[in-house]
Length: 193
Picture 1: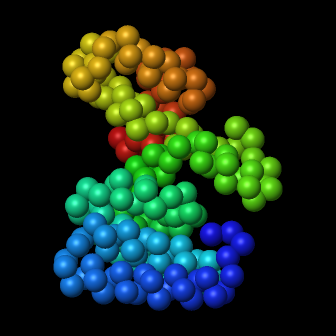
Picture 2: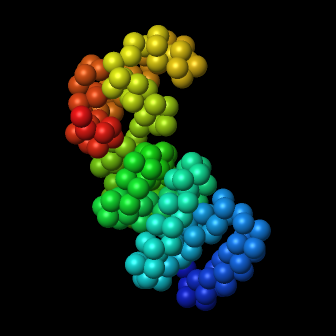
């Protein structure tokens, strides 16, 4: 919401309030998740960080209980800084970790470029670089499964699994499965043992 004017934020607040009322009346859980997330971005733009975090905490909590990852992802990359703050505050860390890992790297780079902030490929956190499928493969690698076993579970070919593992190795700067799992644990992408 760069280049947003106070009048635009006031209009957004009024629209979101009407939408929240309508969604509450019909018990549209998914819509309420989306509305609170959008309202969190609006509050952050207005400098109301604690209110933004409170709204997003409610949104994340509802999304986590219903497995509504996609709804929050569709709100956009503007949630990323708020999600990172919730992660620091230990709010739904596993779910927020999945959200942050799912943001496409090109959106992150485009946002950095549009804000004129220098951002090199090396500065993009690894959890942003790993795709959802790579995260799936990484999790199964941690369970010491073979490429064939992973392929069966994920309904892929062993060749596709091998390609994903090679991509994981490159992104984590390692050269084997054990090193990939250890690096992922060190970065918080996988739970510690």
